[in-house]
Structure formats: C-alpha cells, structure tokens
Amino acid sequence: MATIYEVSKLAGVSLATVSRVMNNNANVTDVTRKKVMSAMAELGYRPNSIAQSLASNCSNSVGLLVSELSGPFYGPMMGGIETVFRAQGKHVIIAAGHSDQKQEEQAIEFLISRNCDGLILHVEAVTDEYLIELSKGKTPFVVLNRYINELADRCIILDNVHGGYLATKYVLEQGHKELAYISGPLWKKDAQDRLAGHKQALREHNLDFNEQLSYEGNFMEDSGAHGFTHLYRSAHNFTALVCANDEMATGAMASAREHHINMPSQLSIIGFDNVFFTRHISPALSTINYPIDDMGKMAANWILSKVYKKTTPKLQTLFEPELVIRQSIIRHQ
Image (tube, rainbow, N blue to C red):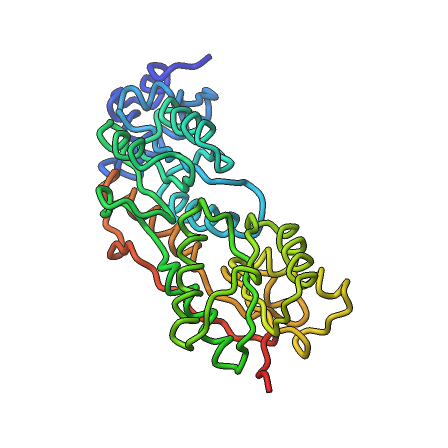
C-alpha cells in the first residue's frame, strides 16, 4: 500500500505540501496540486481520513440526528443540509433517534465518537438538561425545531403557535363554527404549540374548544384515519377538520372517503407542513408551510460559520409559517 512519503517523493514536494493538497488548502498552486494528484493516482494512494482528522483536528464531517429516516418531512431537511455541506467539501453522517430518549442519547454519542466536527440535532425525547450539559463539551451543535432558553442562540425553530393559529383562523373566516381537531402527540412541544394556536383562534371568534371533537394522533397517516373515524362516530357534528400535520390530514381524508363523505362540499380540511404530496391529492390540501428545507440549510450555515469559520448568509433562528390555500376548504353557508 502506497504511503504519503512515496507520494511526496514522486511529486517532488514536501510532506506538508501533500497534506495541504489533501485538505484542499488554498495555499497551493494549481501546478503543484496537479503534480500531487497525479502522483497519488499513479501510486493508487488513498488518504486515511481518520489519520487526517487526528492530524488536522478536523474530520470535515458533520453529524445529523433526525427522528426518522422515512417520511415526506425529513427528506427535504436532510437534502437541504447535505447540499450546503457538499458545496463546502464536507460530509454528513446521519443517525436516527426515533423519538426515544435512550436511542437519541446513543446516537449523539455515536456521532461524537466518529469525530464529527459539529452536530445538527433534531431531537424530541432527550431532556433540556442533557442538551445544556452537552453544550459544555467539545463538540459544537445546533438544535432544529426545539427551543431551550439557555441555548437560544443555537436553536432554529418555527413559530408553531402562530402556524396553528393561522390554520384555524382561515377555517373560521370561511364561516365554519363546528371544528374538529386532530393533534400530534401532546408530549411533543410542537404539537402543544399548534394546539395552543388553534385554541387562540377559537377564542378570538368567541368559540370554545370542544374536547369531544378532539383526538390525539401521533403525526402518522394511520392516526389521522383512526382519528377521523373516532370523531365521525361521536355524537357531535363538524363541518371542518383541522389536523396538526399533513400526514394525519391525508389519513383523515382517506377515512372520510370510506365513510362516503365528499370533500370539500361536506367536509373542509386543513393540514400543516406543506409536504410535497399535498398539492397532488384531491382535493389539493390547504396547509401551513413549514420551511424545513430552509431551516435545515440555516442549521448547516450555523455549523459552517461557528465551526469552520466560513462566511455565510446572515444566521436566522426564528422562521415564520405561511398559510397555503388550496381546494380542500370551502366557505360554509
């Protein structure tokens, strides 16, 4: 197996120059870079990334922890993050925490053990105290979709309360007064906040939140279907359904069709997230845009700025949701 010493000798340059080429250092002429690259190709030399990271104290890799690897929500986030880092010659190591405290902690420890230069954490189950303690360690990190007062400058969040408010406010403005609601799991802060926004809009229209017209889902499509069936079988009528995310809204729509309910003439429905398929289903789903791809890119820029000292666009920690009006809601007479 060829060594860096053989590359240095064949290229006629110093070991330091070979190292600079391998680390994409700008202080190398094009002529010298080509000589080194040609020598590496001729010898079949492959740099040892672990040895490089130990020598330079930089692995050029970033750890990304997400709740799930599947589904329409996390793909755009992971894609946006990877695009930003790839353009800067950095690599992403991805782990999943599955909204479980032990698995999230294990995944974080794994990413740190891989000598990641920084971490992007989309975590839901680990405690605030755990993250505060983690911030005292050597590995910098930024948090997505979660606010911790002590770590405010590294938390990139959406205003979920306002998003929940916008969704329900629009439905009410269309004349609907009998609203059902399918929430996410209420141990999660974003589900709590979206429900709080829903209740705020109801109060502004002098309406009470009806517990018997609410159902706690889990942000998955099947819980939307189960939720609709539960609400439909209750003794309470409703003309509109507000869902805390698009996947549950899609499940609810499928269940409504099974009960021979026409949408939107008999039932108006709105979701949250604006995932890619919402514009293609029938009727196209009104929803709240959650710019998770932009938020992921912002998290990547946070790492580039704070860890790699790169010049980046102005860092932003708070993102605003936007109402997306499509065909799934009509005015109630």
